[in-house]
Length: 231
Ligand SMILES: C[S@@+](CC[C@H](N)C(=O)[O-])C[C@H]1O[C@@H](n2cnc3c(N)ncnc32)[C@H](O)[C@@H]1O
Image 1: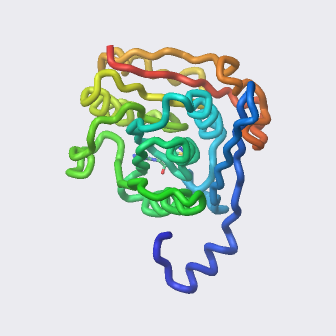
Image 2 (image 1 turned 30 degrees about the vertical axis):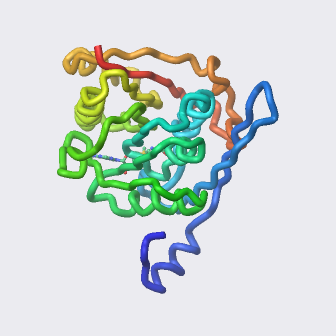
């Protein structure tokens, strides 16, 4: 748990609520629950976005190949997909922007709320290559939920992804995207950085309904799941 003084600890406790996300197999009685502390705050990375629940459902759907994999989550915020991957046995690194320390604290809290040890939490600002980022080992899967929300950051996100995919050319970037404007597009950037994208229908991993993981996603969110790889 990040250290706080008494005043901040009381303020934090008054704002925080614990949300439980439960994932269940379609064809067996296998289940898993993940607790995520959310803070009532206007900042982006303080609560679980609908994209995170959809991406976590994708991780759950692929649980058989998650164990032992090296996985990094970008722009993790409360880190539901990454924490789920950790619970499923992956070696997980959670990241958020270097200067957004409250988001990095959130990542730590989410691990703590699930008794998850051994997860690395690092500052990783998209498009920037600090010594810590340059020292990252090979990743098998990169997770990113709702990282494409501000067009000014799109290329920076993809530059970071490209760097990680170059280290392991068989790695994949699993990302969910909430369509907020039909004019937003990453195709030209994928071309520029020699990457390719496969759309994954939500129905193919049972994410095509508004009640997902025990959480109600407002049904009219237009969320897309994409797998991006190096060309
Ligand atoms: C819309 S929120 C999504 C949070 C979380 N992935 C989810 O889906 O619940 C965007 C996240 O990106 C992080 N972020 C914003 N700008 C960033 C940057 N330049 N580099 C890295 N992370 C950034 C924010 O702190 C926030 O956690």
